[in-house]
Length: 110
Image (cartoon, rainbow, N blue to C red; front, side):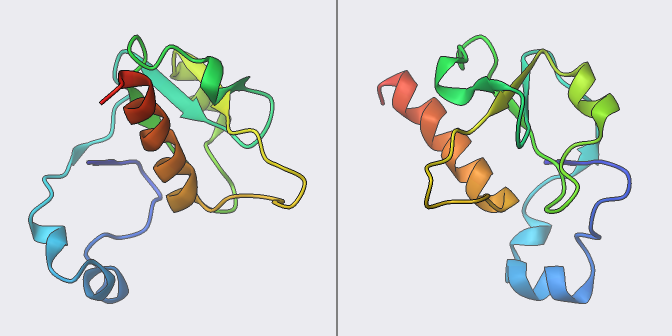
């Protein structure tokens, strides 16, 4: 897992409690945009179901409120948006990540 500058402290008391010990099992490394990265953006991206997720297997997600900084999204290979239905105004970052991973799994035909 990679965490960028300014993100929440993964070793803060609330994060440690929420992670129930798993924090120490997930290796952390410095943040970098990997080749084949998809920036998940709230608006203005290609619909996620149109992205070749075999060619672009890495997802970059931003903060809950602010989303990805423009300079980070601009360094990704493609920007994608998860189309929302009328009943849903927005997604939190955990749900957006879940949908993106499910989309990749579904397209892989596993």
